Length: 383
Image (cartoon, rainbow, N blue to C red; front, side, top):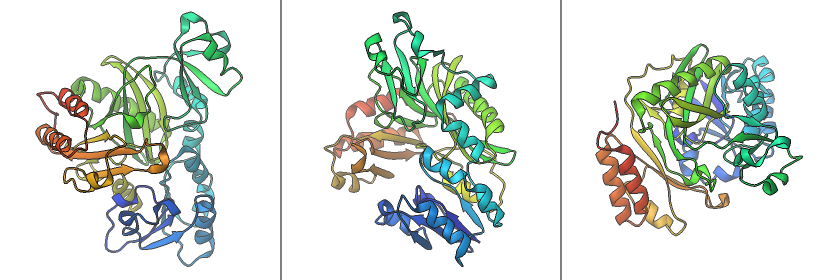
């Protein structure tokens, strides 16, 4: 079977079978990534600007026409551009695994997303007409309608600040103090694999970017009461919106009885590398759909996985010499946002021991290890 990926994003995670040929569009920022390159049998070298054009040329004119095309772009704009090609690709007899055009059009615009959620009765934060906001309504959160990945979000505490945004394409919502979480769902026709939530730390008045916060999978906070509720809401959203591929729902949780939906992503999200269920990661689940295999049943066995921010002074030499790190995220072009490490273990004790060793290795700040110890608690995780 010939399987093509539309983007090199997360390809280092896949496990291919002997009878498969993996093709992928390979952009300049991934050419020197050995872990990605070694998973690709036939790379199609391209640029970010010409990626989809070159992909369609291969599909329509080349001898390398794939049997299945998997959409795996990392941004909203790219995923929408891919989805616009689905009908044409399918008309050529190629199976497409990935986001539908309908889901992208809903999810890639925050105003449309909010109206869609409200039409189904899903809980969202209270909205304001920006022209009628008073001092009593502040602080409020302003979100650029067409932005994603934690960008274009501002916390406004004064009318003077608010006036700077009037006339701009933003939506205004009540500021809610709570814990951010996300739930990933893998969809195949009418079957859904709903992952436990990923914990993403508390909201803050300083609007710290999500990539500078600790993440834990599966969520350890009030998990017995909260996790089933969030999974059920995520399932209902997916049943209404997702037919084939990945969907990711972001929540703000006030307590086990009160939570709201922040946004929906109809694409691979930033937490996709963390999630490992019964030994199957997100990318391999997409491959299972491409192979027309049934989604696995969950046995509720997970690796405990953490993504932890690291300081700018930590060197690559430090990171590469550590045996405690599963994956290193360092992208110098991202204003130090993507300076994170991933660690995993089967038990709470294993995770905390790794954290203590990473302090000694000069990789981790002690505040994160204390935070991890507090969150995991003495009871550990439920399996």
